Length: 516
Ligand code: FAD
Ligand code: DLZ
Ligand code: SF4
Image 1 (cartoon, rainbow, N blue to C red):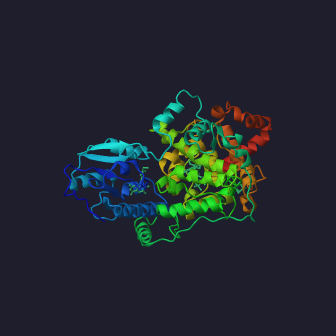
Image 2: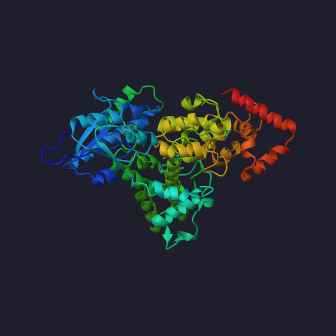
Image 3: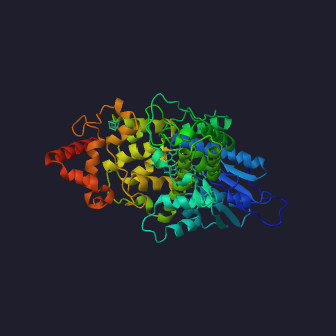
């Protein structure tokens, strides 16, 4: 660890450049304009960031280890860097406190920081009244600036991702032939909804052995956060850019060709399928989203992966990921407290233990506990769907997701949870709630084959809980949802049911809810 010193030979005071734990990119704007001869870098592991939600142990280890490796790279590149460890005796516990402390040691009139990803931290820095002025730079690692997104959103009745995505294709030129999309269509999702089979070859994600730095961090996390959720070991995430680039190559070679086909599939015992597991590396800054997309695009033009896979993959990154960030900054503050459906039930304890007889929920939660990972359909259609059907308080659901995934930062997690998954923003993001009965899960997975419950039974003690909860959800929210054109059909189906059948559904749902 180095201490900040004012360089002897500088005629004018340098700046302090604060690098946050998810800004581990050598092309970070503040590093690009910083001067290694004069400026000092500050990185700090602090209790406040480590505990604003009870992060998964693997997520904590990932962030701290990647921060330490990145700090070593910056020092080797000639920067004067102060790195504060979590257990340093003088650690004040917050990033603002560490900034104040650094300014006691290093004369600086300016603090340079790339805009934090989360509103909370941006506010803390913007309202800081320390002895230097803060200059906040736009985060150029995103394609759409706040202004660009705001002007795209302005005047639109509905903010549909698909149209935003097309603009991002035009802006980047990814999979474009002049003004036209490659292959003649913008979106190949209709080819991407196949269920997976047990006997398919499943590529495993690249696993990296922990080095000395990671081992120290693993000990630190176990010691400081013994009762946090999640299994700490085996720990195999990449924690450097070099290793993350290998993980990217591995995904492109082994999984991308079938990524599209099985994107929505779920299979017991196969937590990763053909997914990339790159979100934690992109979000923390080890990989640049555009370089990831260009790499996938190359695989298409070299004939290694088909268009449905490559287009689908690129859409997730330049479409959904950028769009989610745009929504977050458009709607904060206040977005994380939205609760359009007035849901108020507490998050069931089994979200932390995985102890439930519902096989799909147990699989998604135990996998989350073990890997700090679940893929999109598990997050959306299993744990998210259940929470929405059961009427769980969306803020509690939001805090759970923010804590348990290695890739979770509020700017991307909150729109996915509050908006896409819980419909708590009243439909800003989705044209209808992602509500589904057990039938959907049965179609897209093999979980139901080993479940205590029977997915075919609609009511009664053996019935799949998703079945009565689905109807209960629609009826509970009839006033708010029945005018939605995409829900007309289910409401008509309900109205055609006999009163006894309706009653059976509602009684079964009540029993499930009372047992939570
Ligand atoms: P892949 O399936 O391989 O997808 C490729 C990449 O596309 C991902 O790495 C990611 O960068 C991007 N991507 C895909 N879908 C989305 C999306 N909906 N929003 C933003 N980026 C997307 N993603 C996060 O990065 N952090 C979160 O905290 C997060 N929380 C979520 C919560 C819920 C309820 C839901 C439904 C989705 C959430 N997502 C989140 C989106 C998505 O589930 C993850 O990005 C994805 O599962 C990460 O795994 P992967 O890298 O294997 O993704
Ligand atoms: C997620 C996280 C954690 C667990 N710890 C730290 C930390 O100790 N120091 C730090 O600078 N950043 C950490 N982070 C990432 C920040 O929470 C993240 O930069 C903000 O949430 C903004 O996205
Ligand atoms: Fe999940 Fe219902 Fe299938 Fe059981 S029967 S795995 S609860 S969908």
